[in-house]
Length: 142
Image 1 (spheres, helix red, strand yellow):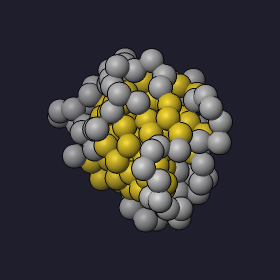
Image 2 (cartoon, one colour):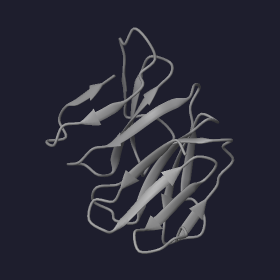
Image 3 (cartoon, rainbow, N blue to C red):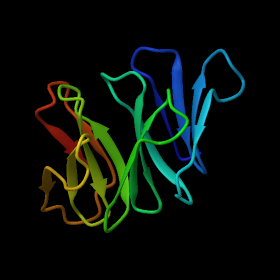
Image 4 (cartoon, one colour):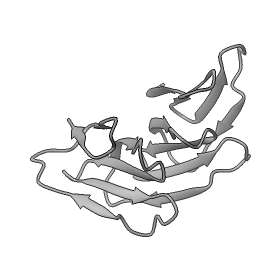
């Protein structure tokens, strides 16, 4: 297991490693499992507003969106280098920012993954993590 994220309002949590598993705290087995081409899924995050939506970053350089009501993943975008973590904007839940190995952060609108809305530059090393402030106007990186 590489990462875990708790749901914002439901008694669910998601784990990732070889696959993405969504668990209910009252069950011993995952309620839903997903795979989509990555050797390893590195991070997972539930959307703060859309209760059935989560996003992952993978070792195949992909960022995947999943709707846990469906049996298949929704969308995937592949970047030039691997993304380490991602964070949903808490005030604009259609947008997320991914921390990437190429020293940049990429902000996407989940409705159009064909290109990033914004590329945040000037980090001196790989960006390992990203987290939004509660207002959604600022984020911090590591």
